[in-house]
Amino acid sequence: MLETARSHFFDEHQGTVSWTSAVNIFKDAGSTDDILKVVDIIGGGMCTPDSTKAKKEAILYLMDQEKYRLNALEVLKASILASEEEILDSMHDAFPGLDEAYEYLEEKIEDGKFSEKEQPSSKSSVRREKILEKFISIARNGAEEDHVEDYRWEQQYNGLNEGDSDYEEMRDAICPDLGGVFDSWMDVLHRWSDKEEANTLRKTLKGADLFYTVDGLADALADRYVS
Image (cartoon, rainbow, N blue to C red; front, side, top):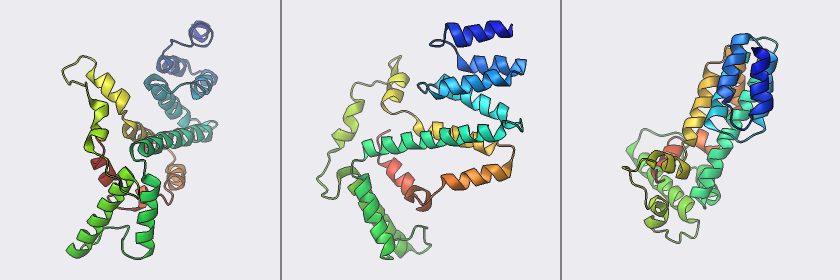
């Protein structure tokens, strides 16, 4: 049975197999070496919903094995970072002036005119909101602020109709749920059995990026992106 599964998944139909099924079969057989081989194969291929799910299943299985737990943690870290990189690339595509907007906000922070954490006073809240609006404007249009008409943001959705049978597929192709994928990887980290290892990894992921340190920044940017 195990040899048949190996032949099916590794030799005959690599382009069409379900890697999630492969992981589950090898888990039931207790064949850790085959699971490691699956992780290696899908790690070098195109990322798909099936390969992502298979990798998560494999990581959670290997997590409970002392010999392989740290290897699985490295795979998890690489997966989280790759997901984060996809989000950042997508953000730069959607907001061509994002780097300039970063510089603007960093200057305001250095000058003491903007706090990374929300303040209770209404006066500071109003000032903070105005600076965030300026940040969004620069991110969308660049520092020169040549106005970008809303149609430029919405034109990619022209022709989509919620009543179409392929609506969700087309919508996801235009605007994939990258945040949902990232959250699902962070959920795997949340389920990690060794909490000290998980906290150490979490600290390495959350660096000095403004989206981690500035309250409301990610939400403000998301609110201005057509989704």
